[in-house]
Length: 562
Image: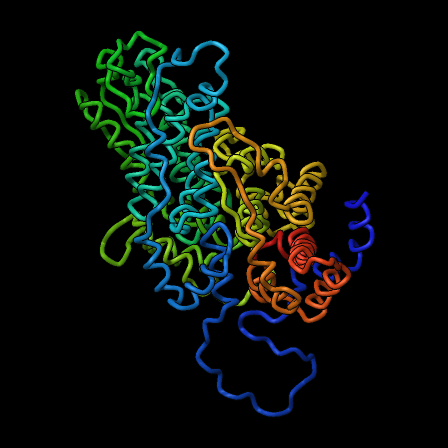
């Protein structure tokens, strides 16, 4: 009844006040408030000032959500200074979760053991805990994006250690070289099982990995100009990046590998497959004949390692790989609708970092986040819909959480995006999913915005704001897993505002809207809080903050990062 009354009483007045992708006022560039024509000559434009709002906007793009400390640090250091600090930052890891066990390790009926070793749960818990609390936010955010381009999923392979090592590859190489990522994921046993490269035999080479490696993980299906636009032939048709014969050639080059085995067991022991280690050669299954693909030739008798290196090099050096990867990362960090010029500038850095290095992801990430299109005031086509994972972490970081991540794992399936369990190699959504109602704009995460998910997202926001006291049962639930530390929202920071509603509104405006709310929108938030009273001043402050956070977090302005 309480939830219904809130939606009825405040839904129209407050959510409408915070509605619309273009409704925010006061951009970080400081647009004038009036609409009249000024008759005097404009003053010279001063050098742009990096404001708190600018810092919060960068935090939305480069972290799992702004916090007061993060915004303050970005504001202090500036964009490039903060990026330098983040390139050196550490804190997140899955390495301690990467010990593979035999498939018959757990006794029958031991659900705790099974969940610990044969599910995503411990790795996903660590992902969320680090996303909410670890200092290396940029590393994690870029690794998350890379893991949505190069996909392997618990839906097909339920090895916790394999999932840990697969995702550690992204953390380790986020600011390294893209070629190293391609090489390591290609040889990992976890990927070998997921896309059938493991045990591929020269007598019948599996083409699954070869196809997805080219289509999704590196160059993409179509030849691209450096600005990400498709290359067209004389008839105006797109041109394929590879042929069926290329796929067959790559598949032949990748034959002759199988899983390493736990404890050095025989390769015939199916229970001892080690998904967390690189695959090992089986020379008798390897195609030793000459191979050609993607303009590359591998001589007869070349080693298995040489054949794999040739495949990786051919894809990495393909002319379309730079714009394909660059546009994907721009889409996930900044906007799914970048101009071709933006893509071209970033792709040029992928092709040559400035030091003659191709695939330098540190340089690419810097180029993406410091580009004029990323840092300029939002335009009509800028920004992107939050995906559920970023909705959960963004709200948790705005409120202030400590967590072991388990409450997020319990939520993310119902929210439509269970991390590390994509429904297919194509991830949870395509990057070119159209914005409903538009013939030109893309909105990838909108693929998840069906009626059921929208209601779940709204109820989630309600539960963690108005219903989000520290005593909430899902926060105190014992996960039954080792090293569990549970979850606690830190409402004390909001209670400290006391009756200063303007300060509460200012924090919400900064962390959730990058200081873009109009005065009427701020007044609407304040009005929602003023109606709540309680004899205990701390409870009153908390309940008022919870109400404003509920209204803010369920609004379209929060659900669209701009």
